[in-house]
Image 1 (cartoon, rainbow, N blue to C red):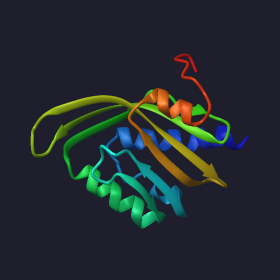
Image 2 (image 1 turned 90 degrees about the vertical axis):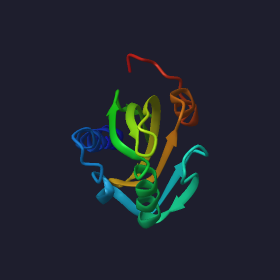
Image 3 (image 1 turned 60 degrees about the horizontal axis):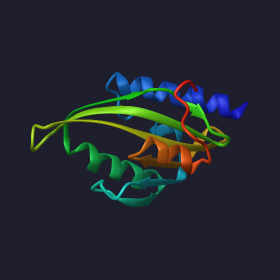
Length: 137
């Protein structure tokens, strides 16, 4: 099933991110990928295409001296994959360590990411795909 395969593919991306390879997954981006960034990000709003996604990621990553992103789990959400995660990062300018729980929602078609969205609330991410969060899933 595509949903299960998407979960597997994205699980590999998060494993590589946890190991420090923050470029992992770029090969999965569709040429016309739409990426949505929260208003709290320096790159807030939508970007279109691989270059837009990469530029937004570079701008966001530039703010951090150290960053660790660990997926709690990957949830097949009927056409999307919801990934609640824990972020720990140290601000490059401030030296302040930030810890946050948030989520990504990925939509894939034919093995390619056509939409990527960052939610600062795990509940909002699940609501966006018409689900409620269940810790055991």
